[in-house]
Image 1 (cartoon, one colour):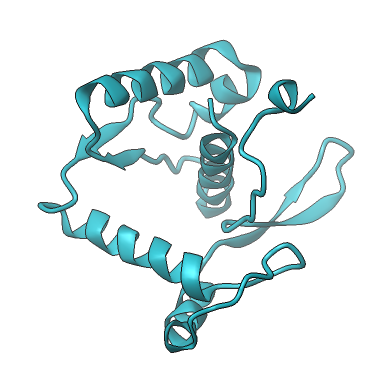
Image 2 (tube, one colour):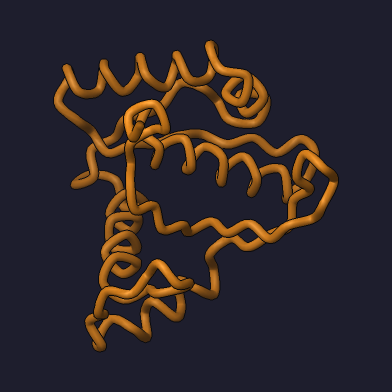
Length: 146
């Protein structure tokens, strides 16, 4: 499974965990070609059933994604717009150094106001800040990079 999806599920899990102890979430994707959708469904299923983190996260995230047509679903259209704003106007941290489109920056500031920021204890019990928006510069897993 691509690293960006693993991060997505991780951040969704953290967000749901921060709301309350019984919050649950759904995964909704824009419609893909049937073959690509089947591949993604299989990857998501394998992640949530065959990995320890996936099994843990399936306690809060329904492990079966839904597919909708973005041209018929306002929320998916809105998500596409927010993704565009993040890509061209949102910058945070040392890794996000590409130029922005200045006319989009005011919208990016609004996105920054709603993006998830929370604290979570790591394996050693140390509280650390986690963000809903991350810059991932290489989507390959560790096994593919070495």
